Each structure stands twice: as structure tokens, then as C-alpha cells.
Amino acid sequence: MHIFRKRDLLLLTTYLKPQWKNVLLLAVSLLISIGLQLLNPQILRYFIDTAVYHGANASLIGAGLLFIGVALAKQGISIANTYLNTNVAWTATNQLRTDLVAHCLALDLDYHKTRTAGEMIERIDGDVNALTNFFSQFVLNLLTSLLLLLAILILFFTINTWEGLAMAVFSGAALLILMQLRRRAVPLWKEGRQAITTLYGFLSERLVGTEDIRANGAASYVLHRFYLLLRAWSPIFRKSTRAGAMMGIISLLLFVLGSVLSLSIGTALWMQGTISIGTVYLIFSYTDQLSQPIQQIQQQLQDLQQAEACIRRIEELRETQSALVDGTQEINASSALDVTFDTVTFGYVADEPVLQQLSFHLAAGRVLGIVGRTGSGKSTLSRLLFRLYDPQVGEIRLNDQPLPTLQLRSLRQHIGMVTQEVQLFHATVRDNLTLFNSAISDEKIKKALLEVDLANWLATLPDGLDTMLGTAGEGLSAGEAQLLAFARVFLTNPGIVVLDEASSRLDPATEHQIERAVDKLLNGRTALVIAHRLKTIQRVDDILLLEEGRIREWGPRMELEQDPDSHFSRLLHTAQEIDSAVTSQPESANEAH
Ligand SMILES: Nc1ncnc2c1ncn2[C@@H]1O[C@H](COP(=O)(O)OP(=O)(O)OP(=O)(O)O)[C@@H](O)[C@H]1O
Image (cartoon, rainbow, N blue to C red; front, side, top):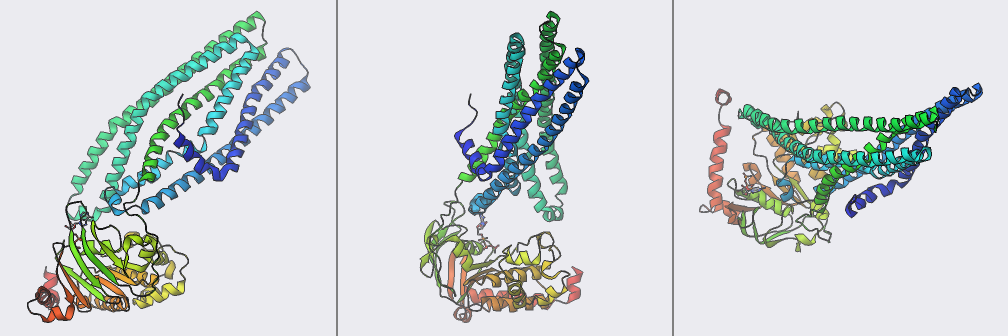
């Protein structure tokens, strides 16, 4: 019978090998518990026979004490078993979870874009959770159950050949019937799992978008969709629960039948005078024990079927390769780097280019302002430089080294990226700044906060750097979140900065604070700035004007600014008009709206 695929075995050995001592200990303790389990009925038989045939009191007391001792030892061993089982399972599954998370983090954005957060959680945690039993119990439980079953049958045979034969046939039949029943329940179980995955995916997306959902009055629509999902789930859940209950009833009936059969033979033998009354008890006790290994064996085989579905999904995930192949070279320069885009064409979907034939050169230390209408490809350009995607045509180079030749780790150490949406974690201020790198000292962190004018803010925090930030930066203003993102860049001190400036309007004091921080950030670095503030545009050296993914204008800012026919100067003019119109509006007028 096919029980194991080679790959299941490989997964098992990979994660169990490092803890082979615990696995061995578990095997020994399981064997001891089998021994003890078989021993107790023997003691009871002795006790009953001694009592019935008026044996010595001392023998009875001795047997009683031994029985209690064995029962206590069995409990002790069972605690040890549970402890070892849990330990082995958690260590193995946690390691697998860690490996999967590391693997997923290395996958390209195309992969993540097509999957919801809920689905990823289900694949990393849900599937691995379902393997807990597989790791801790499968082989050992299967082996020990087989051993226990064999031992009980041998004991039956030693009592009486007919009894042995009857129980061997019964065991085989019971196992087959239970496996058939289980097989019918498996598709229902799979359907149930898929329904849960869909439900989680739906929930995670809607929870992330709570604000927008409420703002757009879409709550009742979302609830309705949720209701539809639950309604679809309900019959699946009902069917699988019903199948489970049926299994319970049928297996109970099956074992009652087994007991009747076994006891009938035992009684007949006793009436013939072939066996003692103690042995009849022994038969009863072993028949009772028989249900345990039989149920365990079919349970383990069933679990393996379920585990296989999860193992396949895990393997599929582990085999998914990032579309980005890591390079081998380190970036050696420690200062600003120069950047070249050479006829770069890129589209998120093949044949639908978002950027076309982009060529420009940015000398080390210069600041490039990227401007253009929404959707013109500004953010996409910055993602290509950070190598979140590779262009379909052309090449991007840093100090004349093509990006694909560079180690991604090294590349991302040398580029600091601040996006419009600052990702903050429900963690301490320190961890939010160092991104959980404990090697960065508090002095360095405080210096970075000083650079972005957040030293006073830090002083107001109740626990300083140990203060916990709310989920997604709750409690922080948009300006403070931006400044914290700048502080992260100061900590890594990269040679290139990509800044996608937040377009939200801030109060004048915070605006000023951000301008000062941007000045410091750009100083001595090569920078690409997607500028939304006039002040920032006025700070850049060169301008790249994008229009529908193509370069409309590119050149030194001063030249373009002074050329009245340039698109940039017209754009600047309009922007200045809007800016002065907005800033000259009286407060009361704003409040009136
Ligand atoms: N992850 C993505 N998958 C598919 N298409 C995308 C993705 N991101 C952006 N696009 C598309 O690429 C085009 C350029 O988008 P991009 O975000 O680069 O523009 P942008 O100039 O930065 O716009 P904005 O100023 O609004 O941020 C748009 O048509 C957009 O719909």
C-alpha cells in the first residue's frame, strides 16, 4: 500500500533530523507505554484468579500495589509523551514557518500582487499547522500502533488459537471499514479548508480597507458579501460534521460487535473449562484495548492524506522561484553612486508598457526631480531602480554595474526608499526605526532622530525608544510618519535616495520641519525625488518630465525653468498659482467647506 511519497519523507527528515535525540526519546517512551498498557490486564488476571481460587492475601496485596504502580508509571510516561510530542512538533513546524516566510519575502512583487494577505497567512500558517501531527506523531504513532496491535493479537493467540483468529479477522475488517468511511469524508474536509481560505482572504482585504469601506458607505455591501460567503460555507461545514458524527457512531457499533464476538468466544472457552475467569477478563480487557491501535492507524493514514494536500501546497510554494535572479557582485562604493537608465521599457503586464525607451544619466551626488501627471510612471521608475521588477528591455546601471549583476541585499543597502505610504509596525519606536536590527545602537538611533528634528518628539514619549507605536502608526501625524521614514534612511546611510514625497498638505511648522529633513537627506547623495511640493522641486538639480511613460523633457532644472517654452516652466507656473491660491485662502474659508 502506498503510504509515503519520497518527498514527504524528505520533508520529515529535513525538519526532524536536528532534533533526533528528542525523537529517539519519544520512541523509547512510546514503547515503554505500550509495555505498561499490556502489563496491567495481566496483573488484573492474576489478581482475579488468585481471589477466585482463594490465593494468599499477600499475593493479592502485592498484585494490587503493582497495579497501582504500573498505572501511575503509565500516567507519568503519558505526560512525558505529550511534552516530547508537542516539543518536537512545534520546533519542526516553527522552523518550517520561518523558512517559508523567508522564502516568501524573497519572492518578487508580481507573486505577492496576485495573492491576498489572508491567503498568504493560510499558506504559511494554516498549511503548516495541519502538519503538526504529521511531524510529531505520524511515523512513531503508526509504528507503535502497529506494534501494539500485533502484540495484542499475539497475546490472543497465546490464550487461544480461535480467539486469536477471530480477533485478527475482526481487526483487519474494522480497519478496512473505517478507512473506507474516512475516504468519503476527505473531499468534504478539503472543500471546508478551501472555503476557510477564501473567507480569510476576504476578511483580511476588507479589514485593511476598513477606512475606505466606511468612507464610501460600502459596509452593508461588504457585510452582504460576507453573509454570502458564510452561507456557502454553512452546507459544507454541516456535511463534514455529519460525516464525522456518522463515523463516530459506526466505529462505536463496530467495536461493540468486536467485544460481543470476543466475549462470546471467551465465555464458551470458560464454560468448557479451557480458561480461567481471570483470562476471560484478560480477553475483555485486550478487546477493549484493540480499538485504540486500530483507530490510531486509520487516523494516522487519514491524517497523512490531509497532510499530503498541505505538503503539496507547501512544496509548490517552496519551489516557486522569484522572477528576479539575485546577482553576485557587491557594490563597493561607500558614497553617492551614479545612475544610468539605458533605453528602459517596462510593463507590469507584457505588451502593456508603462515606461518606454527611458534613457537618462544621473551623475553621483545630483538630485533628479521626477514630475508628471498621475499614472505617468513615476513610482514605477523608482521601483525599477530598487529592483522590485526587472525591465523587459534595456538596462539600469549603478556606477556602470548592471542591476542584475548586483546582490539584491547589497543593492538595497545602498538605496534608501521612502514611499508615500510609510509602513509602520505595532512595535517599539526603536524597532520601527531599525526594522528589528538589534545591532544598531541607541546612540545612532537618537542621532538619526535629531537629524530629522524629532528629538523633542522623542523626549515627549513615555518610554522613549521603548514606546510602542499603534498598529499602522496609529497616533502619529502624517508628518511624523514621514520624518520617521527619513530617520530610517539616515540609519542605513545609503548612497542613493529615492523619495516619493507625500502629497498630503501639512501644517506650516511640519512642512518646514520636513523641508529641513529633506535638505539633509539629499545632501551628499544621489537622489531621485518624485516631488509634490514646490519647495522640493526648487531644490533639485535636474528635471525629468514623464508623460505616458515616455520622457517629455529632461535637463538641468535652471535651464528648463528659464525657458518659457519648456513644459516644465509652464507646469511650474501653474503649480505656483495653485500654491499661492491655496495658501492665501483665509482660515474661515477653509472651515466653511
Ligand atoms: N502594481 C501594479 N500593477 C499593475 N499596474 C500598475 C501597478 N502599479 C502601477 N500600475 C500602472 O502603471 C501606470 C503607472 O503607474 P505609477 O504608479 O508608476 O504612476 P505615477 O506617475 O507614480 O502615479 P502617481 O503620481 O499617481 O503615484 C499606471 O497606469 C498604473 O495603473
